[in-house]
Image (cartoon, rainbow, N blue to C red; front, top):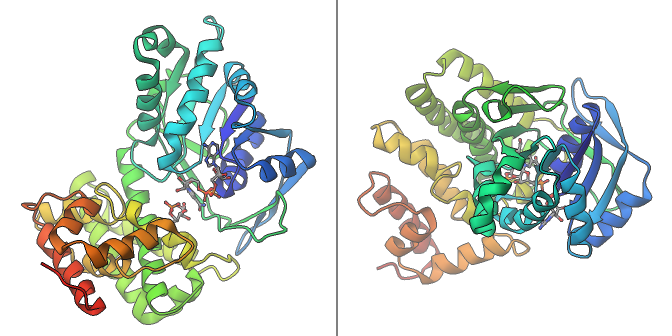
Length: 387
Ligand SMILES: NC(=O)c1ccc[n+]([C@@H]2O[C@H](COP(=O)([O-])OP(=O)(O)OC[C@H]3O[C@@H](n4cnc5c(N)ncnc54)[C@H](O)[C@@H]3O)[C@@H](O)[C@H]2O)c1
Ligand SMILES: O=P(O)(O)OC[C@@H](O)[C@@H](O)[C@H](O)[C@H](O)CO
């Protein structure tokens, strides 16, 4: 069995690649970073170091890597002959992966089993987004090609920090992981991924994950950055920060109970487990990595505005989420183009226009005025004019 995985970065090697290897797949990584591709091809095995309570080392073998910019032809051939294709490139990169999958489907034997495609990104419906990109590119030819692949949404959860320079292909990760996958699209012929669980309705799983793990993580990062803290575990060790993160997560849990009927006591346990994971001192994770791309994180269906908007529509509390959003508006990182753009725009756009374009909220939405108010506070703090 063969799996082609796009994005040989942190989660690609430290989670998706590891589980596919354990499931018996030969692994072909496809990436656009030539040095990373070379380093992977120079190694015959790599180690996934799980650090923290219960962690152990896992060895991955049977892999190689391709540079999809230098050798798109080889990537298409690998996709044509693969059983599974996965991605972990970032939701904004999916349009650049789509042409490779489409070309692979065009070259695929029409009698072969359908290719099983799963995007493993932190976003609701990421595989649907990838499929839509492929369909758009294919145009009229999609009618024939669509039978050559099945597409399943997934929710992946494992914290994989940025790896230190010199680590080679090895990856340091937390021991915890969870991978939930929609099972309907496979028609009973499930991919062999040990430890993954297949579910009928992914909606509650992806929302529970994104609006708890990722809301709490990003809130910890932005509160931590505002306090001059670098490590996520140090940020959460600050009682004032922890209290604010817990307040925001109390609100997202109330929403998940209201929308999906999730049990409040089980959600409390889930939150406690997650905060323990953030507090893992053995994991060298930073507020810069977790807070990266703040414009994406402040967009309409993401970890802050998504749950806060839905909560406001139901008349549920949003004070904790609004405080986290206010902190996100203060995130600065000269090495992160979105953080630079965020700070530039907050200095130059009026509060209402900024709120509308960054969050995607309509001015009439019950959350709009609250976010606009936080934008105004930030502008006052910066001494810039707000209309
Ligand atoms: N790191 C985590 O803890 C974690 C956990 C769950 C989900 N995720 C999600 O996984 C995705 C990747 O995150 P990451 O932390 O591994 O990031 P990363 O930056 O470590 O890895 C991304 C990789 O994608 C490669 N890439 C960029 N453009 C590409 C292209 N066009 N084709 C192929 N490869 C390309 C990059 O070179 C890089 O190696 C994101 O959507 C993230 O939200 C990350
Ligand atoms: O990858 P992002 O930028 O969407 O979010 C940063 C982190 O919160 C994220 O990578 C987590 O570590 C991960 O989602 C844990 O499963």
